[in-house]
Length: 161
Image (cartoon, rainbow, N blue to C red; front, side, top):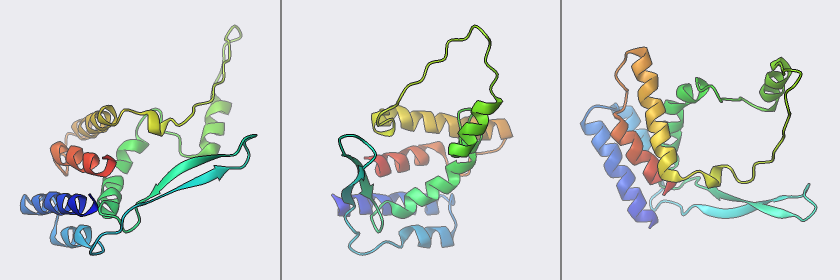
């Protein structure tokens, strides 16, 4: 499966290069993966602050077939994430947001704990949402997307599946 994924990544990168969506240097960088590619490693981080210790599942893709493609997409999508209304940088940003928020006197405050949010996002819906945000971002700028959305979608599917 890892070799198949590696071949699919190389094919996608080759298409991006052939159609001049990426330059020679980016092409070379995206293709620099260990041969054979490293199989991603599954491990858990124990939540020791919980009454009953449980593990948070982690998959380390370092050296894996999609590592560089993931990094490339992250760099490409980061400006779009920063523009989202729901974007919070970190805990301090969240605290500042809460302190700035004015609440009406008759408001009812509710708190909730979200468990495993990322793992519960349907992947196909998440990919579609990212692609829609990508298109909307560049449409607002009145610019052509640097990479056609169909390639972003293919890359996200490779990474997430």
